[in-house]
Each structure stands twice: as structure tokens, then as C-alpha cells.
Image (tube, rainbow over all chains, first blue to last red; front, side, top):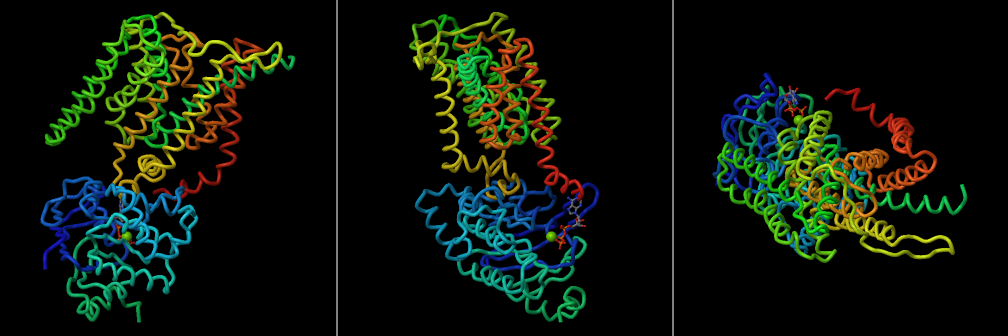
Length: 239
Length: 351
Ligand SMILES: Nc1ncnc2c1ncn2[C@@H]1O[C@H](COP(=O)(O)OP(=O)(O)OP(=O)(O)O)[C@@H](O)[C@H]1O
Ligand SMILES: [Mg+2]
């Protein structure tokens, strides 16, 4: 297995408060790796630092190259893509324009852009029906699909997903997560942050449990899912 | 007031509206992408008028020296910042973009100055010289503080205006200029009433440019990237749009508009090195009517400002500016009444 993303001893601070305190993490090409942990554990902070939105110390290597010094845009050009917790859609613009802009970093010729647009639309038929609707008038679930669809437009090598199921009804959660798990077949690797720990472990290969900015437990997903410590601490409420 | 007078005043107002429309679009464009209220816009327009007048008088326009100086400073600033970042590979591009490109415009203008130029060629050169001005001053004074608050940016922009108009006095001197009308003659509409072709040209050019502007925004990826940056900066970065680059594009496009404003206004008004401020401020009133974000409302605002100014000058020449700026009061009251709900919400949850 070739390592796609390797994070070593990452520290991120907001002012004097350290939110990520020496996290190390690895993700192999073609893998889905989930990061779970309680609220405020530092999951969002970890992803923001990995894409370059927050300054961090430590090392972030992508495809064997150090990318810690690059800005967000350069990381996106290399094939990373973040779907943030706050979605960050272009609210006043149409669904279609949001999707088109998703491929901005690729500078695709018109024909290829169209092909990719059709590809994303077949994945999310609901978006296709709402092509001309403004993004800020979409429902929560549709917004999440648009955020995912926009990310897919860039043809990413690695997707960083921050709580793709946040605030969605169980049925849509299943739909979104099954789309996510099928992305792997298209050569997209995924670092998945989820509140919905059981569901995340179900579709991932490997998992990290973080708490207070540090990795608490790590292991293959099926092992983690049966680990009594994980169960007691984080999944206690689920069954 | 008779109908004839009202008609004449309306036509006059329409001509000024055309100017405020172009300037207002430039201001809204820059503000929405960079959050800067770009006060020096008017200065650049005034400098363009002075440039065109110099070409017409077969003199070397002082703009060449101004643009050359700014370009030299920008190259120096860019070089120092790149060397600090150890990004040596980007040096040639930076020198080409900030130094060579404006340099070519200056060289062309230098070569052409003093010759017998056809009007369209002189206008083209004038606009070519105007193009680099906003990007250059923004690179020098505003880029280092791009993340500051709107208020700090406004203060910097005001200071920049005073600096530029000081430089304007130094380079252009205190004399006012007025150029030949681009189109002479007039169209008779009734027996004792006719519209000057220059006015028709102004309104037509403003309409055509705004339409072009609209198309560029709606139809091209670069235009959409500009809008995306204005709508959501973080979202834009996440799809790989560099805010610094879109800002540059916005300043460039606004500079182009300022160039056109200068060319269109110089035959109808005497322009001095410091005439820009008043043009900029009135366009600002139009832009405020558009909430500094809406292009269609800004267009309406420009129409209102132009017409009010024209009628006000009929009643009292001395008070016309006061009346125009008084427009701001009802507009601001109305806007804050309408948007009270939208703006209160974020304040309740400090982020
Ligand atoms: N902008 C900020 N300024 C100061 N502290 C912050 C900021 N953003 C996050 N924090 C703090 O950093 C810690 C980690 O936050 P983070 O958003 O990464 O948690 P999380 O694991 O994503 O939580 P959740 O599951 O609720 O999304 C929290 O204690 C939070 O209060
Ligand atoms: Mg989070």
C-alpha cells in the first residue's frame, strides 16, 4: 500500500490554546480513514490545517511530498479537496455555477467540464433537477450533496470530509454515506470526520479516535467498532 | 420650469448618469471582491482625462512618469517580498507582470506622444495607460493590509487618494484641460430642441460597457470566480481561486472603467488634477444606493444621482453638490430599515 497522506506531529493553536496537540495520521491510496471523537476534540481543526486554512506546525506530506508550506489553492491544485463543516457554498449563485466553479483549479476545456458536470449530476440526480436554483435556497441535505458534488468536480485524489451527515435525516445519511463509500471505486481516497461513529467505521478501513487534540485509540475499523473502550466512551449512546 | 427646460436638464442628467454608472460599477466591483472603498478611482479617471488632453496637445503625458514610478516601486516591493519568501522561481513572472507590462504601455505612449494621432488611437493609448494604475497602487498600498478591517482599508484608501492627487499636482500641474468632443453635431428632436451627439455617445458607451461587463460576469469562468470571491472568500479558496489574483482582476477591470470615464468626461467638463474626488464621491452615492453589492441598483442610483444633480444645478448651482450628497440620508435610513433584521442576527452570536 502506498501512503497518500501522512501527517506527523501536527500542532494547531488558536492564540494560546492548542486545539490539535501532536496528531500523527496515515492514509493509504484508495483507503477510507475515519476520524471520530467527541465535540471539541479538534477534528475540524485537524482537517482545516491539513488543507492549509489554518497555520500549523509539524509535517503534512501528500504523495510523498511535503505540502505544509503550500497555500490552500496550491494544495487544491495538487488534488486535495475539503468539504468543510460549514459547507462554504456560493449562496447567491446557482447550483450549476457552484458545480462549475468546483472544477476551477483544473482549467478544464468546455467539453471535459460538461462531461464531469454530467457525471456529478448522475451521482446526485436531485442536483440535476435543481440546476438553476440558488444554492442558499436548497434544503440541508441538498446543500450537503452540492458541497460533495462541488468537491467531486475538481477530480480530487483525496477528499477531506467534515461531517457529511451533519443535521440530516437517517435515510439521507445512508444515501450520502453510500455515495461516499462508492467514491473509492473511482480512485478517490477519503479522510472522513463523522459524529455518526458507527456508520463511519462501517464504511472505512481504518479509524482514529481523537480526544482533546490527541489520538486516543487507533486501529482497523472493524476492530475499533468492537473495542469496548470506544464503545463506552463515544458510542455509548448508540445502542 | 417649462417642459423644454426639464427636457434639457434630463438629457444633461442622463449624460452625468452615464459617468456615474461606469464609476459606480467600478467601485462596487472593487468593494465586493476586496472590501475596499476605492477612493482613488476618481483620480485615475481625472488622470486619464489629462492624458488624453496631453495627446491632443501633442505633449508627452505626465502619466508616463506616474505609471513608470508606480511600476518601479511595485517591482521593488514584489521582489523584496518574493526574496523573503525564497520564492525565486516566481521572480521573472513578477517582474514581467508588474514591470514590463506597464512599461510597454509607457513606451508606446512615449513613442506616440507629439505625433499626429487619430482620435481612436489616442483614446486607446489613454486607456492602456490607465489600465495599470489601480492594480499598481493597490499592490503597493492595499495588498499588504488586505486582511484588515473595512475601516482600516477605507482610511488607507483615503490616504492613497491624497497621495495620488498630490502626485497629480506634481506631475500634471494645476491647469485644467478640456478635450475636443469625440463626436460633434447634434440630432434635432423637436424644432427648438436637439441632443448633442457627445451626450448620445456617453450614454451609448456607458450602456455598451455595462452590458459587456454583465456578460463577462455571467458568462466567463473568470467572471464567476470574481463573483464567487465576493460571495464567499473561504469557499473560493477551497475550489482553488486565489483572492489575490481575483483582486488584481477586479482592480484591472475597474481601472479600465476609470479610463473610459476620463475619456468620456473630458470633452464636457474642465478637468483638473484633483477633479477626481467629486466624481468618485458622487459615484459612491450611487454605489451606496446599490448597497455596494448590487449592480442593477447601482445603475438606478447612478441615474438618480445624475438627474438630481442636473435639476439641482438649475435651482441652485451653489447647492447642487449638497443636494446630491443629501440623497445619502434618506437612502441610508431606508436601507437600514429594510435590512435591520438581516444585520442584527450575526451580532447576537459573536463568532
Ligand atoms: N476560531 C477558534 N478560536 C478559538 N478556539 C477555537 C476556534 N475554533 C475552534 N476552537 C476550539 O478548538 C477546539 C477544537 O475545535 P474543533 O472545531 O476542531 O472541534 P471538533 O472536533 O470539530 O468538534 P465538533 O465535533 O463539535 O465539530 C474546541 O475546543 C474549540 O472551542
Ligand atoms: Mg467539527
